[in-house]
Image (cartoon, rainbow, N blue to C red; front, side, top):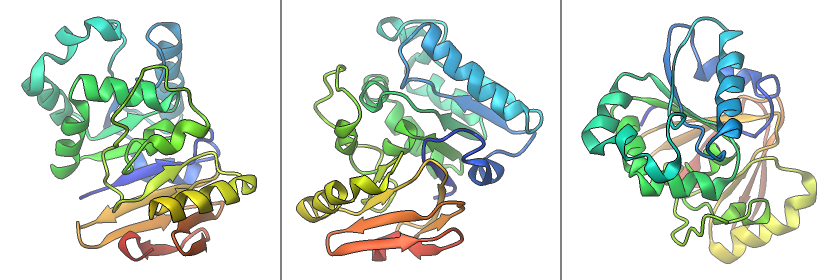
Length: 240
C-alpha cells in the first residue's frame, strides 16, 4: 500500500501540511466530486479544488462526473477496463467532501470502490477530505451524525484501507462521549480529525503506519480509551 492522505475537512490552508505531501507539481490528478450533487454544486467543487491545486504549481486535472448525471454515467465509466485505463493515467485521486452517503452510493453503483482499491494496490495515491476520508475507512455509518442518507445506502462499508479503523472529520471536543461510545460498542478504532489536521497512512497489510502531519492533534478513540496524537506522531494502526 502506498500513500493515503486523510484530511480533516478544513480548507486547503487548514490542511496545508497534508496538501504539501499529497500533491506535487507536475502530477496528474483525478478529481472525484461525487459527494456533491450533479450540476453546479459538483462543478463548483471541482473548480475550487483545481484552483487550490494550481496555487501550488502546474497539475494535469481530470475531473470525473461533470458531463453526465449519475443516472446516465455508464458511458463515462464504460466498464472495468475504461475506469482502470483512466486511473492508470493518474498519479493521485482526490476525493473532496460533501455528503458521505451520496459519495458511497456513486462509488458502489459504478464499481469505483474496487477500482480505487486496485489503483492503490498498483502504487497510486489517494487524498480524501471529509467525506472522501470517511469512505477510505472500514464503515461510513459513522457519518450518520452529520450527513443525511438520502441516497438510501444500505451497505455502508467503505474501502477499509485503514486497518479496520473509521474516520470522523470535522472533530470537535464536544464529540468525545459519542465517539468513545462508538468505539466501545462497535469494538472499532475511530480516527477523529480536526479541520486543521491530516494523516498520512502507508505501509503493508501487517503494519499500517499513520502519521499526523498537523498542525492540530488527532484523537484516536479505541474500545478501551482515548489517545492524543500530536503533530509529528507516528503509530501502527493495528496496535491502536
